[in-house]
Length: 83
Length: 83
Length: 153
Length: 153
Image 1 (cartoon, chains in turn orange, red, brown, purple):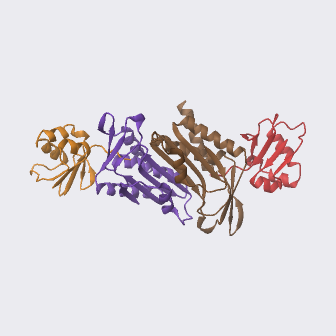
Image 2 (cartoon, each protein chain N blue to C red):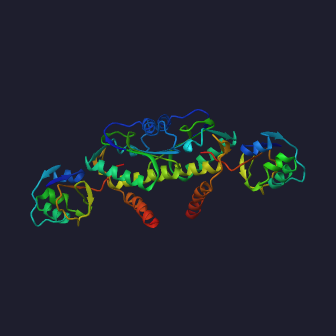
Image 3 (cartoon, each protein chain N blue to C red):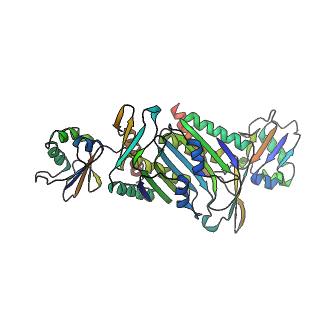
């Protein structure tokens, strides 16, 4: 599965995009975020205030309780500030 | 005193502008309209539905109960439709 | 600024004239009113106005908008004379730091212009000429700004 | 139509492209968002976005506006990359028969764009770089359209 990071989430993780294999125990976005936080201090820091983080599954906004299912691409980013 | 007529008020009266001397009995816009209606069938027709007619004294919108006072210019026209 | 004229306007050039070189503007709203042919019922539209009072009313409306919203710039241009379907009639531009003020001020200017600026439209079509009738909706739209102001006071 | 690009846009040319030769449009509203320098605190603004999702969100928002209001034409253009104070960031154009629809649809597009299109602004100034924080006012502005829709149903 492909993971993408944008704006300060990208700066904090130090990663723009990566391909990962998720543990079977990860079924929802919230569980994915918990798992990401175990991957090192940069990820723990980036996802520390996880309620601020926005998530998109296959380029559509989702809540943290969304199930990952057959997602190909999951993106993490701060609240948007365009316009 | 100068009287001006616009849009269909002008077309119905057949007059764009004229200088008139008002009778002493005319003190308000409503009284002026009543007097104008006595000036011939064109004026009677133009001011027949007098509640539709809008009035400006010296280029500022006024109600029909407005006093004419020292007005130099009074204009009569339909509700505006610009924009 | 306000302008009453027969000539067409260039929206891009008008925005540029208002904003060029400025770095304190965050939001620019324009409204352009154009002549519709209403499915062929209108072949021409003629705009009559009350010279002198027109300019005074437009300036009054613009001053009101500037007193109600923090505008960096504003412009009202209204054409007169005879126009064809598709042609521009009126242009309103408002510039502010934020979009709410720019949007609201532009709507306010159009609502007030529609009910207080002394312009009259006459349409020409296959069935002849006729003066456009005022819409009660325009009065209602203008009244809501008065209500909002009264409620705020 | 929607467009995400680095290049600047020409508002007059964009309006002309949407409306040229048409005689069924009565009202055109444009919104332009520009970079403010905030009294010298900002010297540069960089816009990052999520290619693919950005276009999908803008198309979704535009389709929603077109389903809620009778629009003859609409356009969203959003720039990316690094911009200087005074430069254009975003352009929204809506065209309709009447002004209410054009004004409301333009505001709707901007409110939704501000809360759902995946763009992020980073400001550079004398004190360094910083990511712009989202405003709760933008969420409130978007929520009012949902409330209005629910109330109407």
